[in-house]
Amino acid sequence: MKIGPYDFPDDLYYDREHNWARVDGETVTQGLTSFGQAIAGEILYAEQPRVGREVKQGEALMALESGKWVGRVRAMVSGRVVAANSRLDADSALINKDPYGAGWLVRITLANPEELKQLLRPSDPGFASFIAAERSKYGK
Image (cartoon, rainbow, N blue to C red):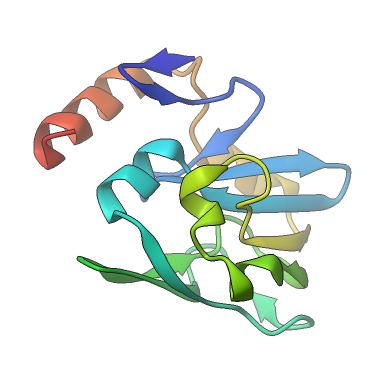
């Protein structure tokens, strides 16, 4: 789905903090949406989570820093961190350049598939209006 200039691939899950999740079997890859990176600005630094760490849905997972924003990224699902995108150490701007591809943040083994029901899908009633309200809020 495209909303204004922002892409929201239909096969992904989303949260209200502008993160996306791709489910592949028992592994969830998480990243920042195209809209999320636009409101953050150019990402200058990504504090990577420790591989092997157990996380709970909604728990602070890592930090991102841009010229105008420093913030925590929360885990979209509970589970164990199985990979962090080491390419971001050398080029954190990958998050801006390719948010749904090379700019992914972390991979987590999904502990509770039921948690996915708490996330948003582009086909959900209200998804487009939520993004429209966020665009208005941030002037994007």
